[in-house]
Image 1: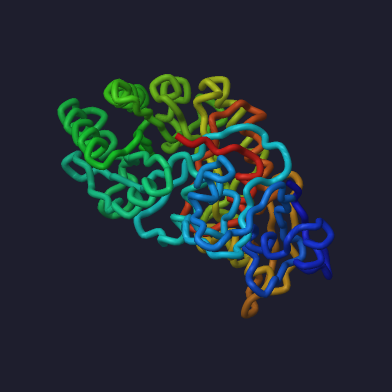
Image 2: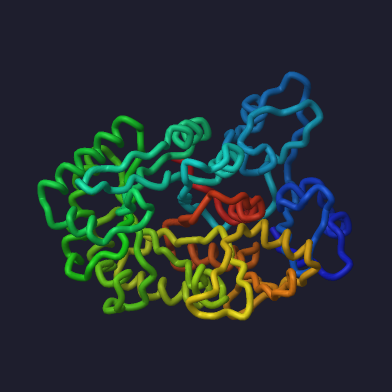
Length: 425
């Protein structure tokens, strides 16, 4: 696998010819539009095909998988353009295997809201070990707020992705509530009733584990939160189901702030089966323009985390989005627009902008002007994603947790598949 950075004057067909690869496969694997339009500085993941198959009349995708001794999920991962759909046509070219060694195996988890498009969900699920519908919140009485997760669970089952139930302190108003967290953590009866509801949902809907995300917890609840996670693990362990807990991105134990103080890495790392480090949102909606997940910042969090938590328990958080800021930035006034990585490239193409790459942060960015206003965009591409994903084997981590799956990103999944053997349960 190689990452090609588009130079001035290059075309998709010219790049494909230089590498000796099929231009249509190159286009589809990277989400390039049908016209082949490219931006200078854009990345393309280039893979050499080792084995391919031409579909014969009457063949099904399952029959092709059996013919080569592989699985449907592997075929979907090698052919993103199938979009998780088993329908194939005579004469269609399917990639059975690519050349090149992978870095090893990795577990993956991705988060999705119930309103995700069916196409985006189906296309992405084969790349995920787990999929986590977002979210079962907590109501004013300490019970579970319902979640319309039927479509997500049905597609996960069809495509062989294990679903994790997601529990958070999100309220009816879609805000994280410190008060509801405190009420659950300090009221034994309310906590016990909530756990019974969680277990009932898991049994009824076939969830394969639990992912807990309590944010903005007062520091006084630090030990109570860890005890709650430990109790959940004790209840789920006999069922063979893991408990994962999301952690704010800390760089030291005594890091101040409501987001950090009750997230005790040592206590929560011991209480849970796995943790997700939320290593993103340095660049955010109301903050100054910068990379969403600068590599030095991510490393700082990892360097601290592995001193408190066994490495093999850690999922590294990976952002699947970027931001577009109008300039000049004014604190308290400027609001960035969240965009997909795919949309970022489309803007660069439409505006004739040249994509730059910050070597320190290992993140792409560019500027453009629309209706007299200068904008700056920071997003993720194959280079920045590769830099972060390579931290998994470097640090000996369990895998990657993607926030989130709502936006299509063919190149990101192509890259993941090129670097790792995604774990299947």
